[in-house]
Amino acid sequence: MIAARELRLRYRTGSRQVTALDGVDVTFGEGMTTAVVGESGSGKSSLVTALLRLLPRGATLSGTITVDGRDITALSERELARSYRWTTVSLVLQGAMNAFTPVLTLGRQIAEVLEIHRGLSRQEALIRSGSLLEETGLPGAWTGRYPHELSGGQKQRAAVAMALACDPLYLLADEPTTALDVITQAEIVILLKSLTKRRGLGLILVTHDLALASAVADRLVVLQEGRVVDEGPTEEILASPGHPHTAALLGALRALEARP
Image (tube, rainbow, N blue to C red; front, side):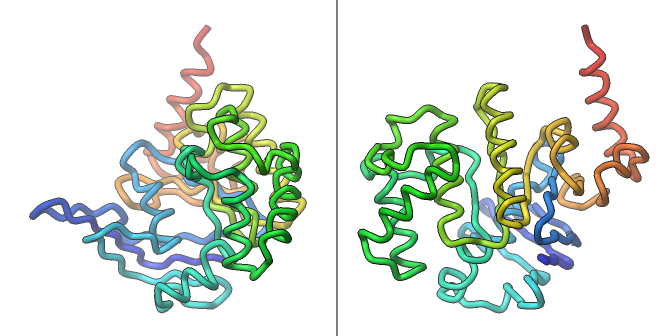
């Protein structure tokens, strides 16, 4: 279980300090899909940044983050790189192209993760890279392809394959369907759900799309202005939202669904 307690994240812009997370308490269960929803600027991506301890220059983070009792906030940067990121928690980026270096093949980039974090030889890592691509619905032979040779949906599948390389316990998916067409969005979501079920992963899905979150998540976490205003089983929150902001989001969704 990932448990964040009293998380406060502040960014500095010039002489001004902006609070992105303001006392966030939230838990994410292993083997469970939790959707973090909220409007733009609510703190969704900042929560991902905090959970991974990937803070930009000038940012300050306070509070605690524990994973199965281990305090992540106490780890050094080296410990985070070696025994937390990729191996415990792995990230699927919002824009798949941001996950890849355009001048390297898919196989080389996934293999690099395996060489560094799993100690595999170059050949072993390339073979494993092909297997990971196949697991996400791409041909294993595509290890020799470059990112620009893939469509947006195919690149997102490859990004998921790379995130799975070190068999993490949790996947952080930050707006994984952004800029994809509706059919491809559905395919990616189905892929993530099937992978998490088969591997027993915890999936933390960050999205502004409440309809998507409602369809796939076991639990919902609703953010507003850097605070958690609602958290609980999806069906319970949909049936009886505990905060006016959640009710307003649901009202807007139902109004859209009712339009001819």
